[in-house]
Length: 424
Image (tube, rainbow, N blue to C red):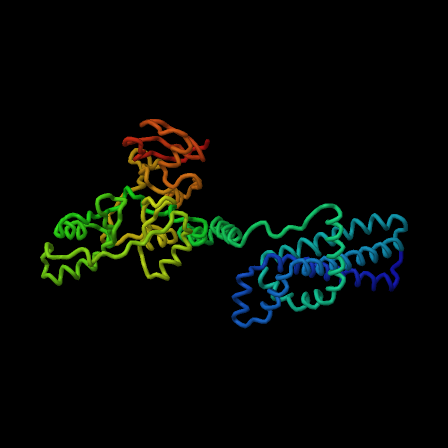
């Protein structure tokens, strides 16, 4: 077996082709794994390389097509040259030997090695290869366009369609947040806050409103001194006024307005005229999306709205603070009444005592659970929905990986439950 000069040059050509193959493989991985958000941030900082990357990944089909075309060209050419060399060296046995050798070389040096590096440094490598890849995509664009046309025609003949992205931008963001949380890069509070922002578009005001049973109202027919006393002793600054029936809301009383009026009469509550202090009530339908309500609060410069159903019946109230709490969690000030809706059972630290009126979303956020809130808003509502009946005190249910025990029931309302994680 002798080595001729052409064999040496062919061997060097094969090594160069393998390097090109590695370049194409690594570029494909880097450009598909790179952070679009990071590239957009760099582009705003006037990084021209990031701009090229964004242009490339905008048309992923053309990008992948050009890279696959270049990669296949160099791989097939390298394999053909290797076959010629090994045929000259080993005769007919050279073909299987060339196949084995090239498979190992391509696998290790043109696939695994460059892709491993690209996955570890996607942003850096994407910026580095952006210029040559942009040239390659432009050069191969006519061929890639023809291939794309042929592929689409073939799929159409076969009765298949090319669908767009399965996940929306919101779903992709949720997935990214969850992934970073699992990897330890995002703490739970930050994950909940970011998730809360995304959830605003999926919630309606009836999901977060304060139920009418929990609303503090004032009877407009009471003496002025009694109204002033009740208002000043309330932890709330805005209080609905009703007349005759609690469904008949005639206005909203703001404690600040009341304080000014009280000052004007030298503190004599009996002399305060309540009627001029009433603000016009703002009613919103229960189906209003939370994000729309947030925007409405901002436009009207209001913080308080009453929620009604399709028949105009009062369902509850929603405030700007309720919406903000969906993002940042509970907001308490020095005037809030502390209500222990969720507390650890003294007998078992893995069990929690939960008020029935606690929203499912709050329980999920507090305990990092994933109880569904599609059919019910509160924990008690979820138990009733799943049980398809109003449970008795002491009854136990298991669903969605959680054990629920009814601790207290008042009339038809479940007021307290004992919950803990429990496989179904």
